[in-house]
Image: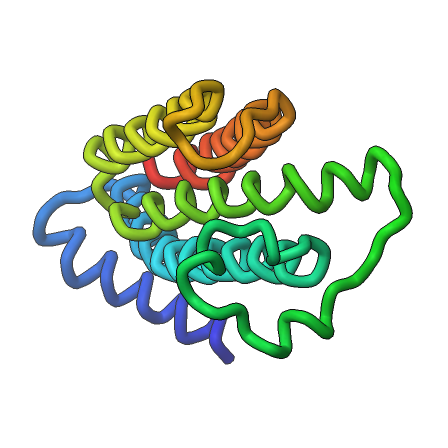
Length: 183
């Protein structure tokens, strides 16, 4: 039924508009492809916003469940919530648990910021590129500035590596699935 309606719309569009304006069939198909791509892009934009929120919350949950919050700078000035003392999950010491506790949340938060930039400026690609590149720069410079004692936190090469991996994978997926459809 939907297919029949679509065929009738194409028929009406072609014979009412195209014959008057002398458009070719390829122009008609390009017009309908543009309509379907833009409709799909609005859904994709919403998915970018949702993915940004999910990666932010997932990073917060990993931090909350697996890290000891006594050493956080935030809780030196405000009291720590009582429920945070009871939900700490102890992991067996291993490379995977170290990466999960100390590096993966930062990658997820960095990815959340990139996805948020893409969500906000989804249809304006030039401005989006500028803001995403600035976000890359700020994120990487902040990690490098932790080498000095002037910035809070400890410098870790794995933080830099995982942020780079997250940014690289996101940019590949963006170029393959979004930019090819949009241009």
